[in-house]
Length: 167
Image 1: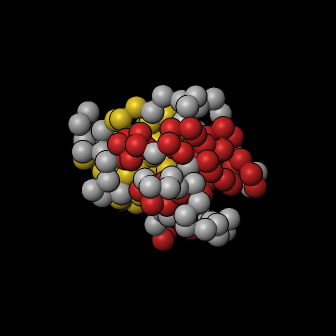
Image 2 (image 1 turned 90 degrees about the vertical axis):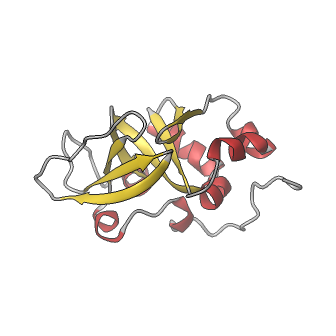
């Protein structure tokens, strides 16, 4: 499974993660790869992916637009849906999913987010340098937009948590 970290506009995410001793420590067993879609990290399971995101929570809030979890080649899950699948066990994913978005990427940034009408095929027509990503999400995220871990119910920790002093 891959975790895809989506940078905020104007953020050189790979550099930010590499420059921080705290994030380097959290990533010491992983090999982040800079891709046209963001920073990809290969992990063993959804549980380990969610744990890594929790370890990098401060960086996710500060530097990232969101985090996606690859559930099959080219198909990703939002953070909210991943939490429902893993922690709440309220959802079981199948071959299809009703609530889907398409992210159009350029230079490692999301340039457009589109809803896919239930029952229709995803309009995937990207180039290697401008990929298009299918994202399965919760019904709320489908209607209201995807927000990352910073807005979840556990996101009440102090803003300075996990930050290097002097960084």
